[in-house]
Image 1: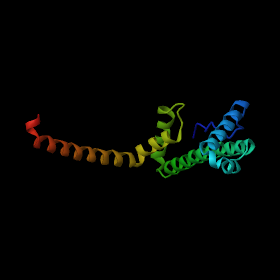
Image 2 (image 1 turned 120 degrees about the vertical axis):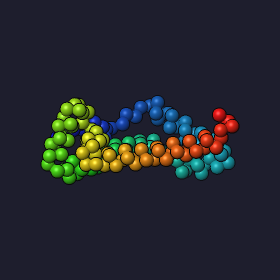
Image 3 (image 1 turned 60 degrees about the horizontal axis):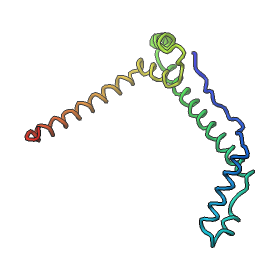
Image 4 (image 1 turned 45 degrees about the vertical axis):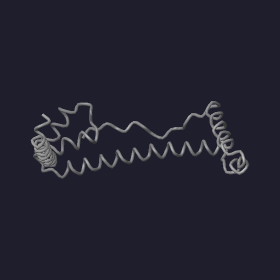
Length: 149
């Protein structure tokens, strides 16, 4: 089974003097916002090194969370794929190789599998039923407002 790997990995952020001066100005603005309490505000503020650590850990956490989400979707797609009977799995794999050349993402695999396991048909029939009901409501309202047409 071919797949496109998730490209982003946690990496070291680049901090420069410009970012440091912007952070210092932000803290100055916070302290100047309430002049009577500026001493107390400055006591609660953290330094540039702790801000860098905070930004780095937040960035790493976001990447790790996105990678975990992608991996969970791949596991879901593979579980759905291997739940198919052997003959449908072969047809699904053929579609996967021929239709999605180079676009081997987890959502595309889920899309192809749902074509064979019936979930896609159920979703389309539910959508069509909701659309028909909405069309009937619209037609009913329009027929009641014939003077406006």
